[in-house]
Each structure stands twice: as C-alpha cells, then as structure tokens.
Image 1 (cartoon, one colour):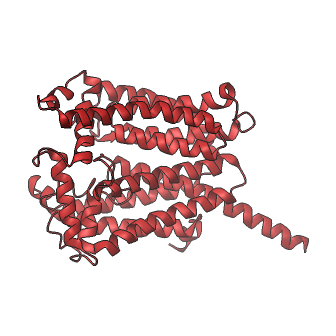
Image 2 (spheres, rainbow, N blue to C red; image 1 turned 90 degrees about the vertical axis):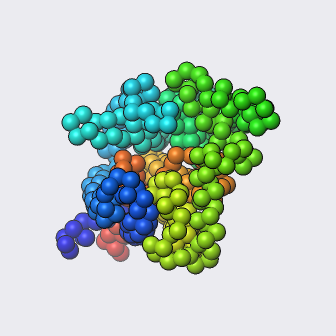
Image 3 (spheres, rainbow, N blue to C red; image 1 turned 180 degrees about the vertical axis):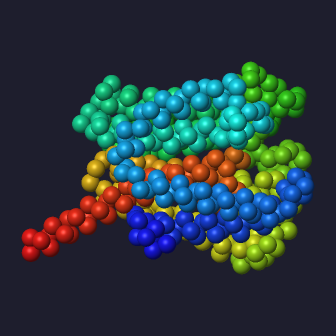
Length: 404
C-alpha cells in the first residue's frame, strides 16, 4: 500500500477532490435509486455496489492515466480523433435510439453501451491542445492558424448536435474559451460566435412562435427527418424555460417542478442523508437531477460545498496550466478541466432552473456509466501533466542545491 501511495503523484488537492466527489456520489446514488430499484425489481444495494465498482475502476483509470507521460497523449491525439469521427457518424445513423436521439453504440460481445460523444470530446481537446501548441507562431493567421483549429471543432459539434445539442453547445463554448487563451484572433472567434448564434436565435424564435400559436404547432415542430427529429424537443425545452411550459404534465416541466420542490424542501441544512422525499417523483434523480437531491438532503450548504469543490478543481488546473513550461501540457490540462467544470455548472444550473433542461450529468457524482469513466480518464490526464510539472520543479531544486 505504501509503495502504491509513493507512486501516486500529481496534484494532491485534485486527488482529494476525486475522493470527496466519490464519497458524495456514493451517498447520493444510494439515496436516489430506490424508485429505479423498484421498477427494475432489484435491491438498492445492488446499485450501490455497482457504483462502488465504477468508482474503483475509475480510480484505477485515473492512476494508470496519470502514470503515463503526458507527451504520449500528444502522439495518440490524432489517431484518437480519427477514430472518434467515424464512431460519431455511425452513432448518428445506427446508434441506440432513446428519446428520438442516437447517442449510444452497443459494444459487441459484452453488450454494453457508451456515448461516443464522451470519446469525441476527450479526443477533440487532446487534438486541439496539440494543434494550438504547434501553431503558436501562425495562430493569428486565418488560413494557417485559425482554420486548422476551428475545423475539428466544427466537425465534432455538427456530428453530435442532432442527437445531443446541449453537449455540442458545451463543447463549442469550451473550445472557444480554450482558443481565446491559445491566442487565436479575437475577430476570428467573434465571427464563429456570430455564426453559432444564428441557429440559437432561430430556436428561440421558434419557441416564441410556438408559445403564441394556438393551432397545435407543437406537434408540427417535432416532425422532420430522422437526423433532426429532436428539433421539436429543443423548441419545447426552450419554450418551457422561457415561459414555464404550457402543460404541467409535460415531461420537462414536470422535472423542473419536482427539482424546485426538492430544493425548497432542503432549505439551508437539508433533510439529512437518505431522507429525500422527492426522489420517488423526480425523473432521473440519480443522473441528470442528482444535484437537486443533494440540496434536498444536505441543503444549500451541501449544494454550495459541491459547487466550491468544482471551483477548487478549476483553480488547481489553472495553477497547473501556469506552471507547465510546455504549451501542449498547459493547453491539455486547461481544456480538460474547463470541459468538466463547465459541464458541472451546466448540470447545476439546470437543476436550479437557470438553464434549459439538458441531458448532461454531474461529473464524478452522477451514477456511473461511460461518462463517469471518461471523466476519470480526463482527470488522470490532468494529473499526468501535474506529475511531470512536479518532476521538473523537483529536478530544478536538485540542480540549484548542487550549484550551491
């Protein structure tokens, strides 16, 4: 055990954050899976043991990923990106369909499903970090610097958007932030933002029109080709967010209303661990809306603590970015930390009705799945950068002592 601890390097605070979020995950998942266990004719303990297994596998993924020199991730970034694109295309046309969208593919033999967008997101930020580090000398040039870094972002977002618009928007926003830090021309980024705002404005206008229409346009909005079958869902979610929803029985309105009830019952200090009263009524309390259950059981204090933990994680990742002497490692740690924290903030914003309903989970807290494991891999890569930064600082101290 001591030998294993000695081989565990990197930022100790991030390791502590992983442990804190894992414990929060165990408590929240165990508390919120009662109705799921009843529907599936299973015991709640079975989901607890499943979550423990995911956490153990996730920690192993973090450990082995952080032992790899982060420069190796630069070498495999292009290969991983080229693998992710065909998988996204396959998922779009032949993936497992749920709620009119294809987000998953089923692995042969083991029959498990995973979201290809998780792999694509990780591959994109690895590849983007590689490109930004190599093109710093020409990054202001539109053709030589900007186009090579914006095209991969556009391809990934376009392939993910038809089935998972919220994930595509989060990836796009995180990428723009990383490009800004990577010294890409502001006027080029502004052009992309303006172009990206066009479909969003059309979505808002469609929601306004649907709300004011009395001829049943809600049904027509959901019609269309298979690739864009979720357009109606996007419009409905935007309308519900803007106007509160016409129909109280609408699924999205129901989710938000139950989340509000959970938060109001929690108050400042909460009802106590395992005492949630809304978990049996709130859809997906163990994944998309697990933050509402945390607030109900641990109050605003518990919700604020989870938010604080993610912000500390971001602060430590920025510290790694500033200390890393090599551009690839700096961009890699920052890009992966941005995508995890922005996803967490989006999930929490949905739970407290500050953002339209999305399908994103709370990283390291929501019930385990492919997203959980890819999150662990991303954290392992960040710790790999931190480990190498610490080694470089250690070697510098040894050199200084020898010179003295």
